[in-house]
Image (tube, rainbow, N blue to C red; front, top):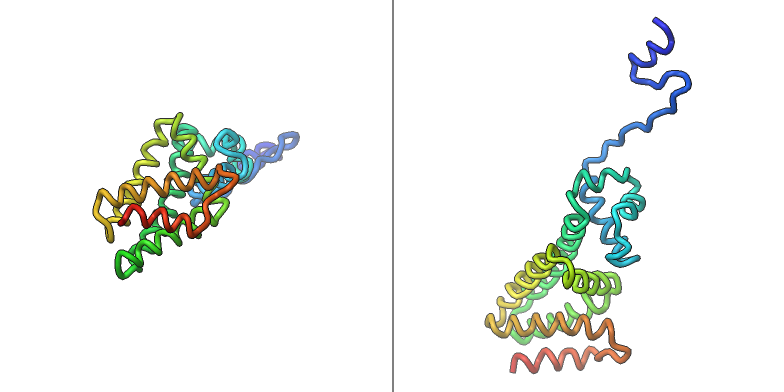
Length: 198
């Protein structure tokens, strides 16, 4: 058997052929692409979150993004779903720990200050989702699911109408605080929340 035939039989490149990259065992690649997409969005915005950019940062072949996700919108929706679940999960923890409505209102103010407004990455991702959802119907379902989950958490202490109003105020405050050159103080935010529940 010739050297070339032996190499081919063993799956090795023969003389003159470029060496092939070994296939990496990567069972968590889909989750890593989602996490990387959030990193890219936080750094460059939704417009900068292309298949190529995400694959490059994740250090995977470009084809991996289209293998795991049928479209860029599907990848963005998966990424923003993870983000929404993290923020909504934090709110649920605050609401479950609150013993009464007054404590729940204080907890909501802290959630807003610490988990949303106080975390630049989380705030940027929220605003990027709002803007992208205005033009991409696939992302509208993500924002709706996030709002429903947030309202359910608030309904542990408030009636459904009040919970919806509080949730809408929180959404508006996120945009206001992000865009304003004179954002509201924590005391003013707390006062705004309190007005709805009086």
